[in-house]
Length: 237
Image (cartoon, rainbow, N blue to C red; front, side, top):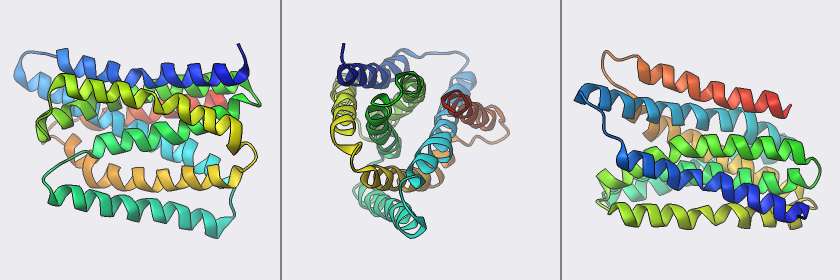
């Protein structure tokens, strides 16, 4: 198997954890009700912690390697402002897809990085693929619940959409492998743009959803999610 085929396979397997998270959310039933509610909020917080880790440990450090200070700040700020405008537009129309947007903002640039990384170091690429997969599981879980409740989509529609989104992974890995190795500035700008968008969505939509009065498990879930990202970053380092 060529390096390009390996990159696309890894990205596909990592992306498959998005619909897997949706399947787990579909079958999840726990009693008593308070425990089910706390678990859901804990998973939301865990996903938020994993996203914050992706920003702090992968997207920003990797992105700033390729750009000087002002272009890096411009790309990061543009991401935050762009997703503020998107979020406002969606809210006016009565929808809520913060988890879904965050999942894609995380998955696509990391798959691009996966393609470029596997061209130089397949072991680091394998570890990155594993980290992406572990992040996609709680993100898929949370995005499924958000779409199911807020937008009244059927389970089949949501899971079919997640399966289709999985194809973005190998496509991004292919693009990163073929093109972005020679244009590292574009990769850096894309990663920082995504990081700005994710950071906005975490504090505007995801963290407020995770809160429960007089419950501490969700906050600890956010710590655990960041620990997952830290472990992956240390293994990559």
